[in-house]
Amino acid sequence: MTADLSRLLNALGLVAVDTVLVLALADQLWFRDLPCPICILQRAGFIAAGFGIALNLIFGPRPSHYGLAILGAVVGGIMSADQVLHYIVPGSGSYGNAIFGLHLYTWALIMFVAIVVGCGVMLLFDRQYEPSGPIPLRQVTLPILAVALLALLAVANVVSTLAICGVGLCPETPGGYLIFNENLGLAQVKAP
Amino acid sequence: MMSLPFLLFACGLAAGWTSRREAAMGFWVAGVLVLLVLFRLHATDVLNLGL
Image (cartoon, rainbow over all chains, first blue to last red; front, side, top):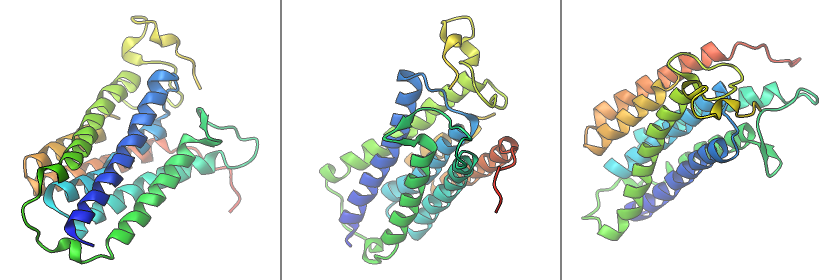
């Protein structure tokens, strides 16, 4: 695998991570499905995993960057697995909306496993680490956009989490946006 | 407090963007450590499983 192909695959992988985070924010804002505390931490897990892929795009592919992505995905996967196990017994309920029959924490677990497998496969190809020549502008557009979007989503989640939880720990079942309470009428957002 | 991991990852991405790789990785490590602590604080329920 050449460095160019590696860059393209890393960019596509980061776009996939960005898409997950955009969909989570859309579900929160559009469908008023407030995230639970562990759900918020899973978002951070996606950013931790995407961080390693972003470093691959900024500095070039390195095994240590794949290591960060794998470790971030493992941390996020532990949180997703914990939440899946909470609701795995029939009759024990669920949290939030289901999408295509699976809840977001189940999709998150699948995605975290996919990230680990994807990085493991990418690590198999040594030619990507060889130095390459100057990179044409058209090959850096997608990586730049993907990294910029990840940074933007990290900042958006800072704001969102502050809005839901304030400066302390989150309530176990958030009933609304704490900082907007009785200001914008968003305090009546339905509790999932 | 719950927004701290996101803030650390955002700082790390900013450090990476400005070509400070070691600082970026430092922010990543700090972010993951905070993430694990927050998970420990929130994951307090006993799983209803008979393993």
